[in-house]
Amino acid sequence: MLTDQDLYLFGEGTHARLHDKMGCHLRHEQEGAKFRVWAPNAARVSVIGDWNHWDEQADPLTARPDRSGVWEGAAANARHGQAYKYRVHGLGGRHVADKADPFAVYAEVSPAQGSRVWSLQYAWGDEAWMSERQQRNSLDAPMSIYEFHAGSWRRSQDPVNYRDLAHSLAEYVVQMGFTHVELMPITEHPFYGSWGYQTTGYFAPTSRYGTPQDFMYFVDHLHQRGIGVILDWVPSHFPTDEHGLQYFDGTHLFEHADPRQGFHPEWSSSIFNYGRGEVRSFLISSALFWLEKYHIDGLRVDAVASMLYLDYARKEGEWIPNQHGGKENLEAVDFLRKLNEAVYREHPDVVTIAEESTAWPQVSRPTSMGGLGFGMKWNMGWMHDTLAFMHEDPIHRKYHLGKLTFSLVYAFNENFVLPLSHDEVVYGKGSLLGKMPGDPWQRFANLRAMYGLMWTHPGKKLMFMGGEFAQEREWTHEGQLDWGLTQDPAHQGIQRMVSELNRVYRSEPALHQIDFSDTGFEWIEGNDVSATVVVFLRKGQAGTAPLLVAVNLTPLPREHYQVGVPSAGHWREIFNSDAKEFGGSGWGNLGGADTRPEESHGRPHSLQLVLPPLSTIILKLEAHGHTDTL
Image 1 (cartoon, one colour):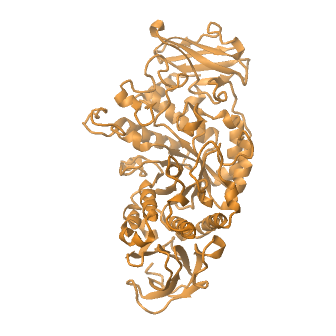
Image 2: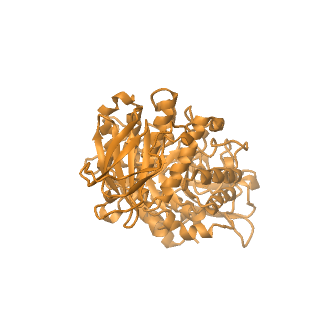
Image 3: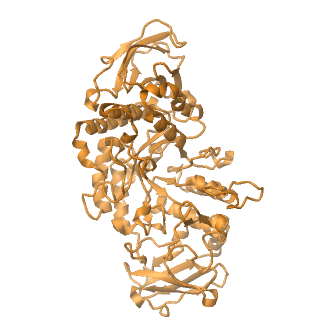
């Protein structure tokens, strides 16, 4: 039943479960299916499909008398698996279009554009994961995310299938030590080359890789292997394909009518009208649908900056100011707050992550504090500055050290994820390895040092597929990763090192417990421009051993580098990116170093360390002295 309360919440913009009421639902007590669609400005709507030979006279829908704009009706001959669309006649008959169901849970395989009658019945087996998910997603838990594109990760099966992918991906992710995977959008999309970012089916996993149950199996299997699943979700814009949301009932229904608000100049797509309650309800319901029906553990919300600013990618005169004359999209801000409130109210054990590239304040702070309410935010500034620094020839890096250390000025303003994402290895940017300077050995050493710095820097981690074994060419969605490289010793060394970094990261509380407060980080040396070395402490909660991290950003080894430490004892070397097993030269500290009673860096004790060339090393305090200064 679609009740008056449902319709009130729908119009208000707070209905979070429209998927239970709208769209197509099989009638289990009798034959056929029930259909509901929102098209308030249509003159006539029919369901056309396989069962009625696509005849619009066979199964007309009726507009509800409550003026909600909802059309509904039953098709007695509709059966599970059959294709259908809505034929929508605009007022006056001036516009007729065959539309996919906005609430469809399954679609025909592209280039076909129809929706399918489908049931979402599935027997889940991930009870153990779901019972402990709160701890896995908490802010003090290790979170190392492997971002991947389902169609181009590994084409051992052609076409790729969710079930086969589940097994091969889970095996690899467990081996590599990542805690979560993040899928580039698998919401249904007509153009494969959009990588899923041009979504037409906000409630349907793409049929390119199988059925909804196949995708449920994918999530279920990863959960049973102890891996969280984050979904890339795109509420910022949608494509203009005729069968999609664009001009749905012969009017600008989901999108703004004025192109200065409703057309995205960067992506040639339509922008949702967040000021319309029904649109907000549609999007919030989509978010909760994935969390509920597919047990998704988190949503990475794409292109948040494009939602927040009315002038995003626009020139002067191409945008309309808000009611106060500003450039902030107040309706989008309100929507994002309502979205996060709904997600955390219904599923407090999941996480929302904003891809937001500006200095908008309090993105990952509660709405009660005036924030947007996200759990975390991608640190795009860290990504940009770190890659720019690493691109410099080591001989010039001393002039740019501030670029590397600047991220610590604002590191605790938000709950940050450090991303090395797909955005950095496409559109002519080359691969991460390709950004590194020097001869072949130095390029790999630079990459190892950067990864070591990333995994010890405050913030959760995200790496795009291929980065873990130093893919040499930039990513392309048409093929697959160059897995043959993993047989090469240099690439194999990087892969082995990333696996070890994940192991150390997960096992050492100092590297993940206090990511979002300055109490978990302490500079020892952040301004040694002459040696181009940075040294810092990472600290966990009371009772956990601190870690000392030293990064040498030049090819010159430092054999007697003095470092002040707050506690006496033996500092064991637990990670060295220059180890021979990772493809390095094998410089190091012979297992560790003992403190000397010599003051340095304002601390009562010091270590004499060997800093290998282009390296990151981690040392752990084993024999505690007085630690009250930590």
